[in-house]
Length: 334
Image 1 (spheres, helix red, strand yellow):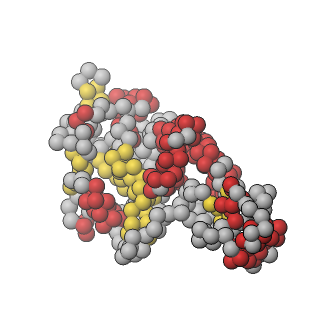
Image 2 (cartoon, rainbow, N blue to C red; image 1 turned 60 degrees about the horizontal axis):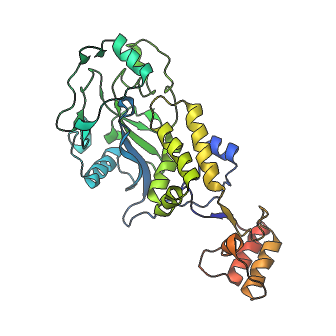
Image 3 (cartoon, rainbow, N blue to C red; image 1 turned 90 degrees about the vertical axis):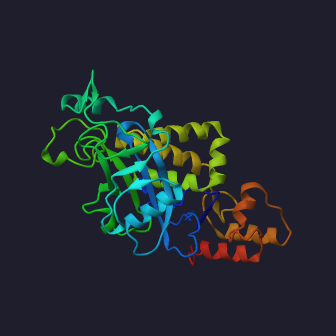
């Protein structure tokens, strides 16, 4: 079973999206074509959400070679983006600073709940400001703003127990370089502060963003999908709320799930089930016969029916499409 009209490159692993949205499990993957010489894609981002700086590199598909470390993929990402960084050699990769263009023009917008912790624990003084120097030379480095700040790497929403040089890149996984300013990752919801910081009501604790990040990477990889969003005011509004929610450190899981589902529902409303020529939501023998009649010139399909009839997406509707759809209707093929 296939769906036409591009949407996501994801065969979502999350039960939430499969169960609540009822996206067909056999939805065709629309990830970008893997460049020659590479073996697949991971999704990678570089972000400073606790500071309210959003993304340096938004979630994006990055090609990788089988067996490569996350450190090696990161180096390629930075080099292709033209960004300077400090991390030592590739075997002991420890990211300490990254070039953030126009950083000197940005003003931190730390969420109120987190700023309260920074003030109470002497990381920020309302009169004197930050307890550590602010960045210089547009390099966001460990030790800026607070004593506890630095870059951390997460794989599928969990901080890796080892450095990026020791983590092997896995197809489809999401890797996030995150700038933490408090509690050794407590602010980004992925640490208990190693028992060194007081507990507080943290809406970001345990929040999963990987599925939403993969969806955003898919949108950013598909110019046609971007144009569809930009040219539809309602869809653009839904997309904007989705983006702003996942880019805000204080968003809860419920909020992220809600905007993710809203975006998917808005996009899949334009989906057509390939082979479902009579548009009744199922693929049956009747659909195969309609395709055959069109191929023989006995009827003229149009609109979504015409699109659904081109099952093999060859650009032509012929007997092959009719036979393929017949096999699907009989349970002999997907």
